[in-house]
Each structure stands twice: as structure tokens, then as C-alpha cells.
Image (cartoon, rainbow, N blue to C red; front, side, top):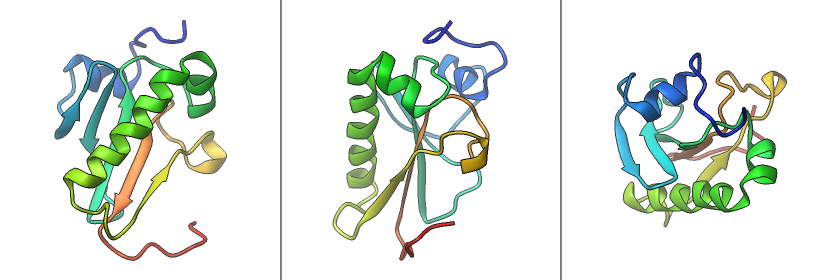
Length: 119
């Protein structure tokens, strides 16, 4: 069921503490942790603690938690002092867009020039 932890989900296991992660911030509804394969000097994932397979599903089911994810992305950028130079927030939705973990998550990227268009 959407919102409930999934036993085979990597990010649900990070939320529960069963898999370690370098957590940089945690709130009642979100967890932010460093990506294990960073694509920029700052590359942090911000996830809702509740399991939703992608950003669209999260936004429809829990708009406040989706807003919490975006708010935390901004907090992470400020914490890593990239808020003044610019940063990118990326939600990959679906395997064709590069989503590999099907638990909604935002990538916060910065600390170097980020060319457009990406990919």
C-alpha cells in the first residue's frame, strides 16, 4: 500500500535504519542523505519517510509531504552553502528518466557548474 514501508525498498531500509547512510538532516517526514555515487560536489537525496514510488504519486497522495521534500532540498543547499551559487533539484520519474530506486526522492546537486540541458 502506498505510504507503507516496502520490505524490498532500499530507501525504506535507510529510513528504518536497516541500511546505513550518511544522513545530513532529518525531519518528522523526510530524510536527507549523501548519494553514494555523487555527480557533483554536493549530491544529496531528500526522501519522504513514507513510501511512494515516484514524485507524482507522492504529490497527489501527500502534497504537504511533497512540499516538505522541496523545503528540505532548500535547507540542504543552505547547509552545504550552495544556495548562493545555485543548485539543481531533480526528480527522476520512471526508468526511462533514470529512476532506479522506486521510492520518491529529490536529488540536490550543486557545487560546480551545471550545464543545461542535462542528460
